[in-house]
Image 1 (cartoon, rainbow, N blue to C red):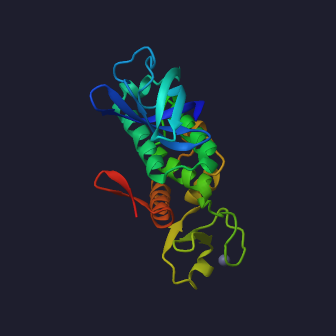
Image 2: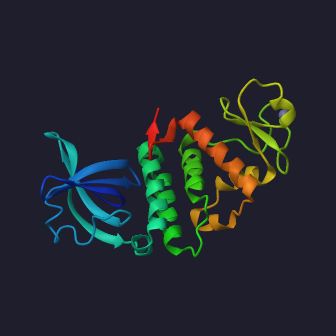
Length: 248
Ligand SMILES: [Zn+2]
């Protein structure tokens, strides 16, 4: 079997003396790994391609005899330059990529995940001031897009409209309620003020290039961060431990 596609490079590592392994995100197949045999020597087949966050057009093959993919050749479609010079921006992008790798994107959600990461990388390349909460925006949006969307416009218990009010996120239920209904629940409750709630609502549709418009005051930023980390940990099963994302 063989396919050609433009993919995003997520990670590259050395394997034996002249071979590389490459973890990449395909817009139709999700996150995959492949070997690039001779990749660290063959400049002709992989001209300037095999670097993290490059968009590359690759020809990939597999056979029944070998249980892995092999990159046959690659062509650089779009590289990054600012991320290579700015370690802080690169660190943010790597954090997003590692979260996505822990998430493990399947073919049915691959197109949305590809768009999200590609646009996040472009935002980190182009925005003068990327938002401080960008990694959390990314985690929330990836979870929403991959089937963990939160219903945020109405109280999940009484149906009351919620915009502009202080609400509670019920952890186990993964639902948002008004304070009155939350009082009757024995679920863990996380408070979300109007700004944090509005940011979560907006994130369902706002593309990464416009995330700099989500300016949250300090308290709202804290509420937002706690809610996203707790939600992702409880429902997706991914949390941060010893400097990396791990899955329950
Ligand atoms: Zn209610």
